[in-house]
Length: 267
Image (cartoon, rainbow, N blue to C red):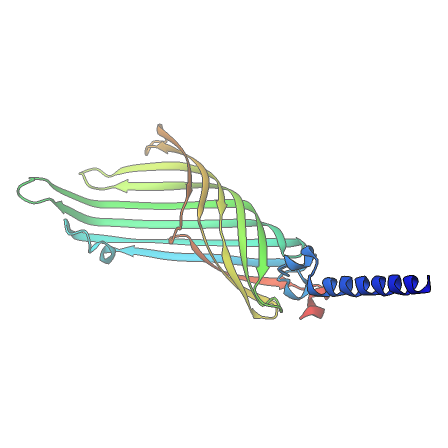
């Protein structure tokens, strides 16, 4: 009887040792699939933190940009586009931010002269000159950002941004091709839901530089056109859904972070 009890005790001890080894060799599934993105050491923005910033872009176009169009000659083209967008955001949880953005955009273009010649065989020639266009618009939008820190200290990060915005503006167009100049004015309105991913890096403890690029989205726009006397002469409405890389929509920004005590301790 004593021998059987001794053998049974040794068997239980052996099974307990094997169970402990199995627990040491194989981690629980929840730990094995954890990537550690939201661990305290890799947080880019902490809950309760505020952020203020501005993005800006500037671009020009001139006759040199049309050199590849061999059928165009004697081109006198000049234009520029300026955009500035200040914004404010609040981290409602770690790495998650919601904010509001205001914007102003100004576009100015001048086509002094353009000659189109398709050759003697086609017998098509066209001359356009004396055209001027300007557009100024204001926008307001609400955006949401989700950050992912790329290092343990939270100095480098990437973000995905979704923005719902409304734009209102006016355009003026002058055509001086004929003997009498023709003037046209239009009221523009646009609603857009866009996706703007980007990269962020802290250049100073409280200053962060960002670069974002537009990838399209959903858009609805209306244009109402008026003549020089203020009479409505036309209306155009358009809706589209388009997702593609837009190199013309690259924005450089600077963010100023208002630190909380938790963030200062982590830094």
